[in-house]
Image (cartoon, rainbow, N blue to C red; front, side, top):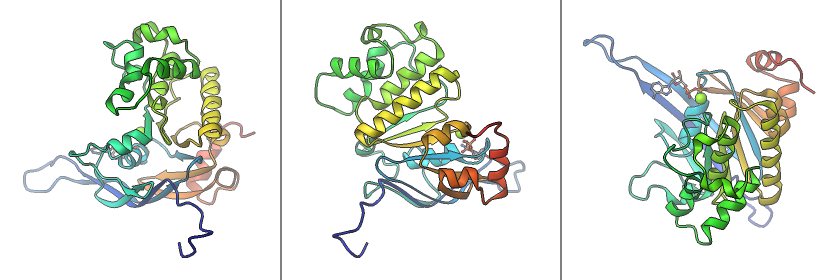
Length: 268
Ligand SMILES: Nc1ncnc2c1ncn2[C@@H]1O[C@H](COP(=O)(O)OP(=O)(O)O)[C@@H](O)[C@H]1O
Ligand SMILES: [Mg+2]
């Protein structure tokens, strides 16, 4: 930070000491509810154009971390900055600036689309909500083609599409406003292998073209190996290991990472 002439740009997204504690319902009127430490003291960075994967078994805190990074939940302590600005849930501004620069895709392609909205309206919604200038119909048509659908699909309804196609629609919606960061919370776990490979290829292209940064929660170690520059391993709410993907997957330092990686049949 001292030499302003040679210092590289700071990471796009920086989390420091992120902690989220939930107080569960009381079991007795005489005692406070038990406390669950969903995330403890997590430090994470994602640079522009970088792909970072979060791995860890179910309940390890991956979704909690993602939600805090996008201000969909409030941290118990710790900070998040995006492009140097503090990220915190804020009803007043509704974080339009953060929504403008980020997109999110969730796991379930069935619940993530509104069944009463035509595909084109669903994909165009961020453009309208964020006041993006330009020809929305054209932007939607281009994005639909980009994710492997047809421009004419804009007139159809979600129920007319398969799970894999719906996930492409969700991806088009997350990318249509040209965010700088895409966060996927297990976005491909419902997809078959071929569709997964196609979406993976698309994400790579967007990274190369636009410098799109990716933060991907995934159970799929093979996918992580192909897409991620760096990996962070979560266990019981703590990041137990993080580093360059090949180092972490091929020479895991933490026994837990070793167990995760060994459960995968082949690493090529
Ligand atoms: N709203 C909540 N209330 C209580 N506990 C929660 C809540 N959200 C998450 N948790 C708990 O926090 C831990 C981490 O959950 P989560 O972040 O969803 O894990 P993952 O996405 O890795 O499966 C789990 O023990 C989960 O039960
Ligand atoms: Mg989760």
